[in-house]
Image (cartoon, rainbow, N blue to C red; front, top):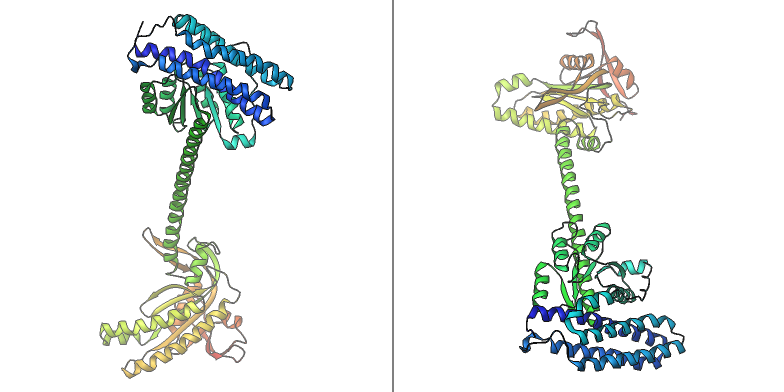
Length: 528
């Protein structure tokens, strides 16, 4: 005689296992008979199911530790045999009727019910002394399990479930029920096999028994939740061990829920659905976080690229028009800061009389003149897509055909120079009212130059080096106010575009030979 909770719980667990088979298989047979329209079978199947449920209530009442009564584990109440005898009679009737209606495929499940009832009869008569050996032996009855359903896309989409139970019939019965509900089911006969299966293939849910010989459900749950690759898989505990301590322990170890066998099929479906929905939402959250991390990484890289482009664009805009600078940054032109050689048309310009003006005027007045002058000249440089190499005070150097080649570099230079002369004449009208006598002088030459970045780290300039730049500078130095002096090469390139006055060959400082020079008076009607 004993009232020990653990001993009563173990016996209740052993009795629940065959009861689970009686109730579970009768439920599935009822579903199949109903689907096939075999009404003659449903009455006796309901009888088997109801007797199983009645027997479950009697066992739970008899072994309830809260009653405070000592129980003889060596012998159980004989009244428990009555529903079992009724179940065996009903099974015999059902076997005959199933054969009569062509339901021979139902016979294996009826044999499983008979085997479970006979095991329970042995337990009732012999008590705890035969519980472990009898139930474990019966758990591997000679009724061959049905082969698992073939995996399908629809089952995979519904969810992949791993059923873990050391009892063959428990696994087979639960797997079949889940397959009927549309799930893809894998099975494992113990804790170690379950862990190996989970590492080999991902699943959406684990249905895990508690009491198993090799590695019990508690230990499997503990290892699952400590494994970074497996801890997010939800686990639903299903066990004939229905003590509250076991439930609490499983929940504390990380189980999503706990169902006692025999379980209610409607409740099982609801709990599985809830677990899979949580898993789906968790997986979606993980995917969202992963995508967000990837987006952030790409955004960060893009921001770095754009910052670098903005910095480069800022440097380029010091020398080129905004449109040209953006074209270079976008890859539509070669990197102009790399040293290269190219034929260019170079324009030098400065103000005649500026030195005297600067020496005799207030600094604020000088700054005002330069501000107006630079603004007017800058607009014309941008309008003609020239490249500003430098400006120093009133002096500017502009060239064409780099960094983007153009077919009419000399023409662009001439048109810009003529427009600049007209612009300065308008400014000079206002300057003269202040007594400031200023006029524009321009020199233009065409030839090859080496072009690229000049300077040192932290202070780079864009420059052109070659005889052509010296020639344009010397022509500018020789030009009087209002003159645009060009080399013969430039004059030939724009012949027909300009009316030019031949100035003869000028001896220019730094050049070995005299340079034939022309003064551009105006654009021709064709040029205009």
